Length: 125
Image 1 (cartoon, rainbow, N blue to C red):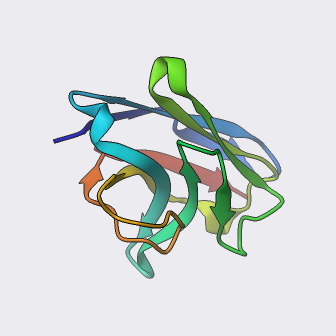
Image 2: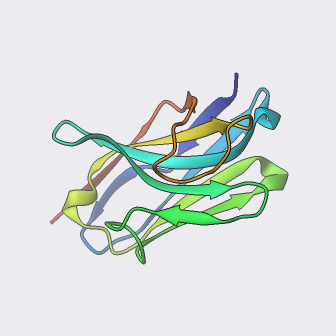
């Protein structure tokens, strides 16, 4: 079981920026693909971005492309999500996720097997 711990959420005004962090521990070797999801009562939980830990390839939902950036620091078993030009509709609980390395492919629409506890991002207009 991969243990994921997120940090970095908060409240900002529209147009502001945040950086979320997610550190994988306790069997982090079980994954080679990690991602970020966000959840609202209206839309449920949807994929935002994903990154392949082997090659660094990334994928993004169209709603965040060019505003959000996912990156990795393999030495720290950590991924990041930089959120820029935030909009009120970005308000959600953001979850980090990891996909079992036995699964092929890595994208924000992939199925993930382990989840963090979530961190709240609130954007006011």
